[in-house]
Length: 78
Image (tube, rainbow, N blue to C red):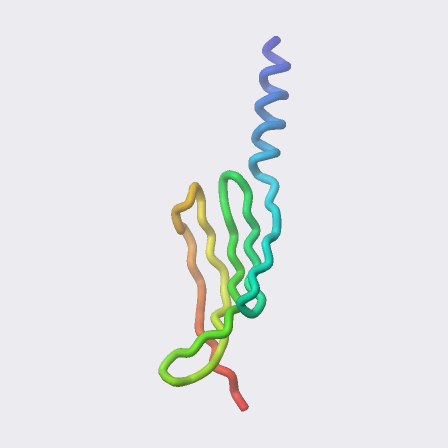
């Protein structure tokens, strides 16, 4: 009985940790969403200080709270 509970808990935890990719139509942003966490890799076209560019980097959310953010603006050079 105890062995079945441990196996069931391990399978449930594994299912909650499997991410599904979601493509956004903002220039290339991808979100990897699981039940317990979400990783966002933004690549969006934005404007900052009258310069066009891209927002790129990584964000990590655990239980809906942002715990890591490394997003930067990269201007388009011509």
